[in-house]
Length: 398
Image 1 (cartoon, rainbow, N blue to C red):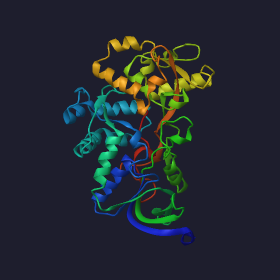
Image 2: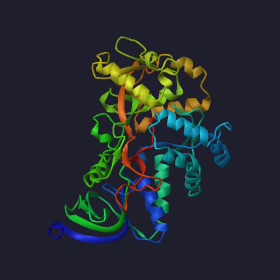
Image 3: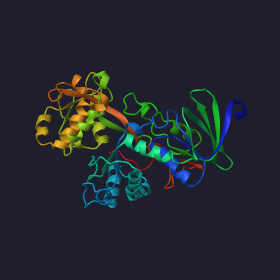
Image 4: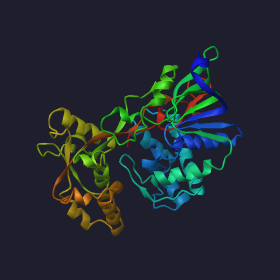
């Protein structure tokens, strides 16, 4: 049957599906072993996917941030404390072996990225962490560095505008042997014969009407893997960003209100003017972790205390007082976020930002669940691997 629908057959040792940061990094590593690698992307290579849109705070322990990158961390931190925070904030559901690998290896993987030319912007402390651990590198910067490194290798073949529809499985040996892809430009089918496949297709945030994710994040990897019997875990735990714009329409989905909440003391209010985070996290309030903030806002909306457009309010009326204690560097950062966010001229739409409330709602931002893997990124099917956001078992909502 395949012979009747397939236009062309390609042979490769390793097939990597998805060409964001995870896919490029996987292809680079596989090619180092001297094997032939094929990298699949359903958009333009290097110009699609979530990496380009990310402000990536790559989490490492604060002590390593000082020792390896001379960042203003805290020497009291260590990988063990980092491990503890992840497991606690993950409600003890994490695969602790995967968490252990992350906290021990992440600093050195980041060091390699910097050695390849990535430029670090700053170190941040995110909700859920006891210490500053987020090493901030723009997604565009990560994309640039990995693309440059990948292009050095002649063993990597790249296919653009191609979506993988199904895997070919040798059922007798429970082993992957190929994949069927559709060329989205020409409308023809390809068969890729391969010894190994690495799924790096990201999450499924586009299932939700309100999301910060680009168009490509449609859950392809989950669906294809599930159809051939791959185990999925924690799929009930997509992560939401609590404060994203829902009005005006032109700014819908913009995350700059959440950025403001990180810099300033804001107040999340329901339609009655009540500061509802007092019920959910009276100590941290709006500085609570993303999952708690998002659940709180969603319940206010579902129980009828939301705005007519289906959101809540974020009050910045105290922002003038906040500005008095904000450092010049912090102020410059915030002003660039407010008035030049994502290329928008927000002054045109939000002229009285410090006097009016913003109408915001949670938006799906990341996928914590996914394909079940072991410490070698193996699935329950031989030769089929997964990495990055498409996997589940150890990530957490911070």
